[in-house]
Length: 297
Image 1 (cartoon, one colour):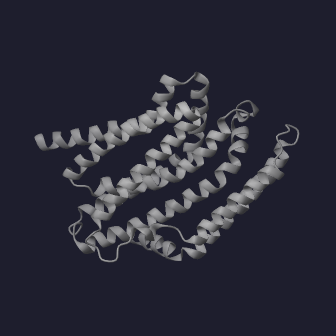
Image 2 (cartoon, rainbow, N blue to C red):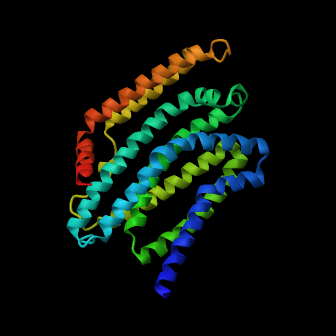
Image 3 (tube, one colour):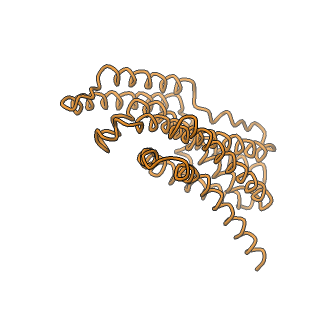
């Protein structure tokens, strides 16, 4: 079956390219950096990717399945079919953007606390908390890229998949080169910055393909997926309040750390609740669409 063999080759190549994009920074660290830097990055990536593995990965897999079923339906290529795909895509993008904003708002203020609670004083006094802070912003790009690429890969034709694979080769080369350069300039933190650059380029590329996919759908606007200004303001307020709490409340003295950490974490919980409540009040259409999609399922 030559057709089946060709499709298997396309998806196998895609898997290899995605593996390079996902694990390329570890290869760069193994070649160019010491065991200490590899250890710092290993701790940060394992801790920071918990949100990705627990929240975003199952979400992306479910989204990919839903998009695939929608695209393969009898009217998947029609205007009405694509309109329904857009009605599913936009709230998903907005939802992961809100979660990503929350991670970016709270992550920098709790990197040190989480690192000390998880790995002890030895690692919390290294570069690991600073790298984990950058990883918090990396999570935002991971969230948006996951859903946008899930849609692109689920709805692409065989010809489009070939083009996407060629672009993934380009992204892989850019990512490895940027990782080496940023590693030389900023150490382990530079690898995370290179990851942010890589994800940003892939998001822009996916948005371009999404725009082309919905070009025939009147009224489709990708900017609808951007959270409201109130969610951005609430996230900024959460960032400022938790940063203030870390500087004024949290003590690194071993005899006082746990007591002050509890207070600091309480401030973070209140800030997170404020962001969630703001999103619930200002993004009611998002909640309505999510409930409608759940009932339809």
